[in-house]
Length: 295
View 1: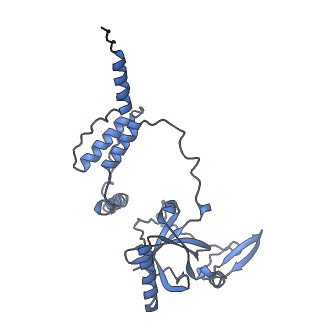
View 2 (view 1 turned 90 degrees about the vertical axis):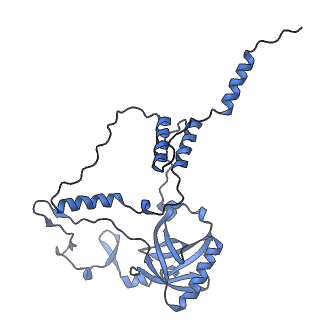
View 3 (view 1 turned 180 degrees about the vertical axis):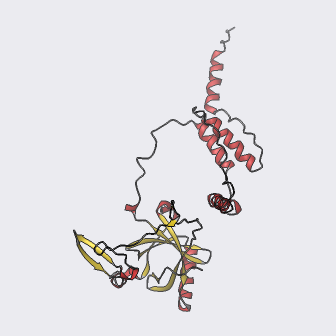
């Protein structure tokens, strides 16, 4: 289990639950160092004091805020730890809301909250069971990394998880990003729905969803270079003719490929004509009949 990144307590009304916060995610990306290409010497970032012109160690570096030009006030880590704010040392639950009211784009990094000691076991379990039975998300406030933050508490297996929530002013408006209004036919929408149905899965669990193909390809490149072999080359892409895509044909071909990949029959039947169109045709046919002569 990773080391705790923060220790404090969950404040739930008058109930206090000592906890440790540990990261819920891991980074498996391949990381590179920077090198001087001419001689492959390592390039490093050094922290230089602008006044003395010399490198300084981490123990010589502190925090400061420039409140006016060249006017700086120092703020120590001890002062930050003792900041007069209730949420500086606790994750304070302030409300319970339905999950569907939370915009997923506001949800940030995830953490697990570990009960800290035997005294925390009962209130921790109580809050966990209450959240499970209530089916609501707990919204909390806590101070972390230089500002007060919002958090979302939910249950993951038998553990309480904390997700950082972005403040409303941290979310950019998407209103200028939508394309101009275009006409999309019902047939095209129905074909798109057919494609969605053919690509629907029960969940995103399993081997297919556990493979990072980019990292695997990057590992192949590194292994080839370390062994003096030829670097794997990408497959040649099909040349684009620059023509306008037939949307219905593209959707139909996509449905066929999706079904083939799942081992299902690839036939895609043409969509049935709309009832309105059929009714209209019937009306025209009726009106074309000659009236019967009266006896």
